[in-house]
Image 1 (cartoon, rainbow, N blue to C red):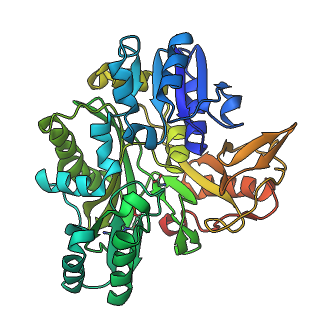
Image 2 (image 1 turned 180 degrees about the horizontal axis):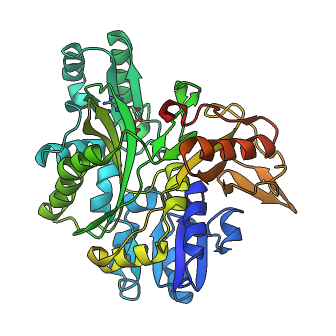
Image 3 (image 1 turned 90 degrees about the horizontal axis):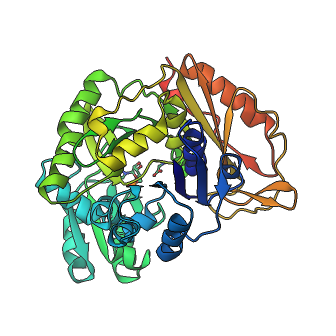
Length: 425
Ligand code: AMP
Ligand code: GLY
């Protein structure tokens, strides 16, 4: 099979690494990819939102299967574009249509969907510029802290949690009236604050059946002990001890099955990943958000735990044959530590050479913000590398990842040293 993966981060490096291990993968292309994906296949300089160019590439290179990494091209209708083109519509495509991608593309849609299908989530209302005063009255009726979410995609920055009512009023004004996140905050969801533990749950679905991937815990804040601003994620571990059999049975019954049932009822054909960002509150799961992709860095922790052929899984999803697929998950534990540029998620410098990448035995290093300049690898983003190790338990996996994290170097290197610590016995 000839495969095209779309995206350029650590997640896509992990996907390319996994798919390239399949004996059935003939030619693997990644667009636009990064120097890590170039170790697994061939990078192609295509813009993710240039659907005609991607379609033409797929035709010219006899691509059999397309797997989309990030959400944006899906929200913008890449799957719809492929299904409208006579020469592309029979190609296997993993990623939902724009209708399905609204689960991530519009928080107001996602909340309405959960309400319609009785899926547990925080109580909420949505507001626009016209209803800003009602928004303030709603805030007043709630207790602190206040959770305000921009409706649309805001590069992971669209959620603001305010401790005081005044701060919440100001934030609401900024989002609705001063376009804090542009069009993305033309509608704002205000919701109840849920106190609990977060866990990322992933499925692959063909719209009828689904396969559960391993769950992971992500560490979102920049600082140790979950302090400081939110990032894309500073590390991840899988499995997650509190996401045990009993909890996951509730997740399937109350969340996963009603989500797939809801999509069917609403006539939304959905083929791809669903990432349920969940909060465990006193043993019960609530949906914080849906995403229509794998998480990053969660993908770097969960894909190495899949022992069966990941290309077979993608093919089964695209063919609507997931009911016959058997996924095998390793009993090994995975720990992923992200090395970031000093200053991230605020301002940071890039262009610094990477050292000791050849001394990473015992870990798999996935490239995120890395570029090749001349003959050498340099930093090019906030999150630079995601280092994953497997071990018989989480402590062993963490030990191996931190050993590699200490060796690999670049100017300004920053990482959290407490990834997974809260989950150790
Ligand atoms: P999101 O971008 O939706 O993942 O939100 C970013 C982060 O905000 C989440 O990972 C949670 O830590 C936090 N968050 C979002 N919604 C809530 C909520 N209703 N209650 C508590 N924390 C929340
Ligand atoms: N790590 C969280 C995300 O990918 O959204």
